[in-house]
Image 1 (cartoon, rainbow, N blue to C red):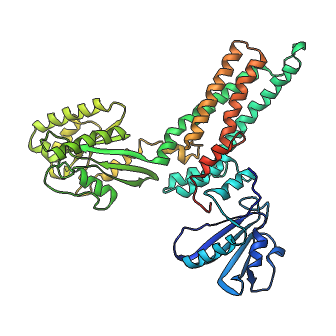
Image 2: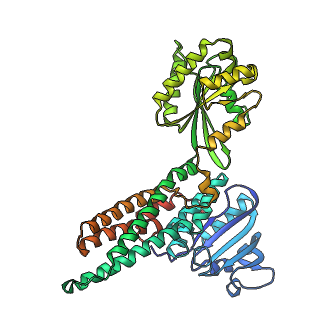
Image 3: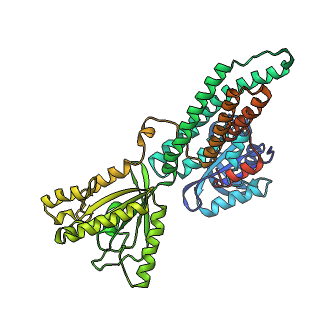
Length: 465
């Protein structure tokens, strides 16, 4: 995939604004822009140094389109590794389109999604995992997403993979060398050292694979279902957590007939809250459909907040038994999920009864959503389900499902090599499994790739990046 043409695209979001940036990359970027640029100093762009700024006018013949600031980045010291021009113009939609159309008429092509970053990868400015991190960085909407994407873009993850691959490649070369001297029965690759390396590779791979559980949470957020009987304060709690009137609140039981979803960031981690219809026996067809949807959404949640109303328990002690029975059913039905019991409306009950509830519902969170009491304790409890310590320690965290699959495959092949060593397999058979492991390592960083894979990755980028 060698590109010899020059591409152009808007690098800033579409729409009107104070400033817009139009980016060009390719062998003719500087020369073609120079033909339509009149510098206030009278200088020619082709003769200017890289990483310099130039004020002037973009002209279509004698017609002045705009006063602009031109940034020059000459190859190979640019984002793409090619000659790059960035035109900072006024943010009028009309001006943006006039400038882009001018250069399209002069033989420059519109860039496809992610083509600037793909050229950067193809020209060796970054590896494939770093290129993917660019998209993650653009999409980051909280501190954790940003931190992981920055680390990966700077090569934290890919450097670790390259190091593992190089170590394995060194032993693979020695084993290949043994095959060339097979008749002389010599051993260049020390089997004990090789076994030690394989154990280290296995340990690192398992650690990276395990980190994907946290990485997936960081990237997609933690889905949290708020469930319970009608009128226990589910919608009020959602509104307090979101700090806005997102859900309709009423004293009439069964107000929420469908699920309501929204997302907030707590401690740098995204949590996707789902306010569900109250669970109870009902003859109302619409409410019944809402309750059924509650169970469907709860199946997809990672954490369940089971909400009970403290004042109802206080006024009717039979409700305590009913609530415990309902909680047991929820816990039994959703065995694989974390269930937090939340006692709401504690502002309406006595301190003695609050303490009594601890014996019935150990490890529960006590709060008043209406009075905003104890909500911070719930937030801290939710954060406890996420291993934020790995983030604070700047550990390598896998967030990309493609990388995760390749790591799993690499681990499988490493285990095959270990078994081969234990069974004293010949070097030619060991070599096959080692090559397979090297292939999956190379898949992550892009040493091994194909046009279809690159197309799938960069198609998800925005145009102009």
